[in-house]
Length: 174
Length: 450
Ligand SMILES: NC(=O)C1=CN([C@@H]2O[C@H](COP(=O)(O)OP(=O)(O)OC[C@H]3O[C@@H](n4cnc5c(N)ncnc54)[C@H](O)[C@@H]3O)[C@@H](O)[C@H]2O)C=CC1
Ligand SMILES: Cc1cc2nc3c(=O)[nH]c(=O)nc-3n(C[C@H](O)[C@H](O)[C@H](O)COP(=O)(O)O)c2cc1C
Ligand code: SF4
Ligand code: FES
Image (tube, rainbow over all chains, first blue to last red):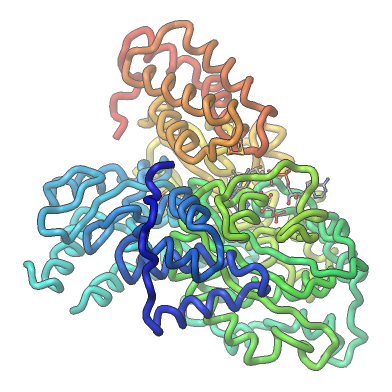
């Protein structure tokens, strides 16, 4: 694995962030701090938008585990962003149950509306569009997960338009 | 509106999918409306009475560990995570007198395509899972537990954490529960996008802060589980069934379903129906009834096929499924599995080759890569189905597909290999003519596919 750079500077975290980390670590037996790595990585991603090698090193130091072990986790799970993404990461489910209810069409509609292909980020840096596997909300399809934390249900084309327009307006880019 | 408010507008209310009057004798979803998830409402519905009962808090004698396990055995409850393993039996495997730490884990990593029932249990009735876990912990003498929640349903994780706080404050969780000598700590953890972490040993690896790669079984988690300690893992819905069983007795639960298939089960119905959603019905209910509850096939079309238990269960053609009842034994007899209870309905405009292409992609994408037959085999399966779909298949491909599928099955560490292979074999068995048509004519038999 060459992606983990030699000699990266460990990032240091703010007091508020460290308090969030501590809350996760407290759930596990003292000698099993590493268990909190999933939650801590997701906190970092929420605050910074992605997981950088510097933050991996910072987390490794915090949890007392090798940076490579943190990196293995980042790369194994689909939702960790290994590079910066748009301000809003849109994940549309295109697994079979959703495809039967227009999941693929929702993705195509967004590609057109945003003028980007799946996997890309819009020029204004606002949106990254991805397809995803089952989100566990199949009865609500088409479904889309925004920034890992907000499940948007029944996303017909008109609701997708509304969501994008409203987010643009919220960002002052309408 | 700020961005958060914008996103709020698109959250599901649950009205269409969960709070409807089309459950039959519901136990887990009974009386929910989306606003009554908190502890006071749960108690008003009879919540935590089962816990009080076993602890002898309501004047009764209480139930000891053996009695709780015997009651669960008597109920005929079978694991709702997919394998249908008898829950009481699993609990009895735990070394109850084991002196060291033991663990209890709830598997809420629901990611089997088509399955969305645990999400609505945890969102709208989180305390029923907490109470079920406390009872399980009591029965097996377990001091520490975790609920591992699918990373994609983060709002559910937050809801569950809020419910845990309530339960702690009320004295149902923590040290000396309700003044007894029994203590149990319970926490929430979350995944972050890996289907394989639903497999119980992969889940344990993930909970230990590692890549979610399955372990060899045996040893089963009952002897070597979280941090190497004896561990019991059950699905969310399995735990959610427990309070009702304790309150009403094992026999009453068994009678809700049919022999060897006790109780109610939640079916997630998706695909070509008028009203997709979760339906809690007694095991043994005819499939035709479930289809009717879900509003029938969309736009009055004809039923073509149903995947009865999540994407890893083999497809069944309409004429077979219409004669099945929805329970473990009936679906197994028909050549498929009840699995997680995710019923994917397909009408007569659907192409089976295209459907299988999508599922094969999924399994290839989600293979953890540890075993060669699965890592390589899932890629082969996808490439072949993809090529047939695109009209580039060869007549020999069907035999080859079958052969690759057969060579994956039973030769891997975990059941994901089987899960990838079984749908392939099922599709070719029942819809061979569609695959042949694709290969021969290089086009689809059902061009209306959308
Ligand atoms: N709910 C979902 O999202 C998904 C569910 N599945 C389902 O998962 C099923 C396969 O699950 P597995 O865990 O591989 O099945 P399994 O048959 O190996 O185990 C079932 C349960 O019984 C326990 N068990 C079995 N034999 C035991 C023994 N001798 N001693 C102690 N414990 C024992 C296992 O630990 C496990 O908890 C499939 O049938 C599929 O339907 C698959 C994918 C996703
Ligand atoms: C690939 C794979 C994915 C699985 N995903 C889940 C899941 O998301 N939820 C679940 O409860 N069980 C899942 N299982 C089954 C678990 O390994 C295990 O059998 C189950 O959690 C036991 O609980 P139960 O006895 O209450 O069903 C999966 C199995 C495999 C092979
Ligand atoms: S069968 Fe597939 S998913 Fe399961 S352990 Fe092997 S490679 Fe990983
Ligand atoms: S298949 Fe799309 S959410 Fe499950």
